[in-house]
Image (cartoon, rainbow, N blue to C red; front, side, top):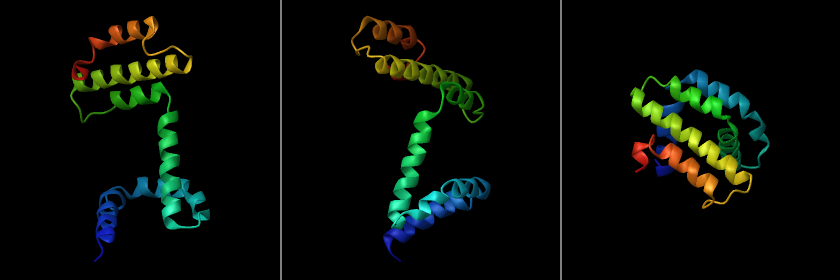
Length: 120
């Protein structure tokens, strides 16, 4: 068998056989990719759509995802929440034109720095 087919089989085993319901939901949402001229093009479009959706999630959903994550220790989840909030605020300030070395962003970093132990 080709190496690419082996990699494909691993992905199918992990994502399709592991959670059929989630796979079916994604497949339905990505039906528009059938209009692509190649399978690789459809996969690329699906990936780009997923990345855009990930970037457009609001901070509430990101934090809620961490709160509901029972697979992690409470301290790890709390740190992830603070990190998500810091990144969200920093990105918003960047979008408003505050430079990385501006006093506002420096104060923001200092305020969150003590809560993000793994960043050090």
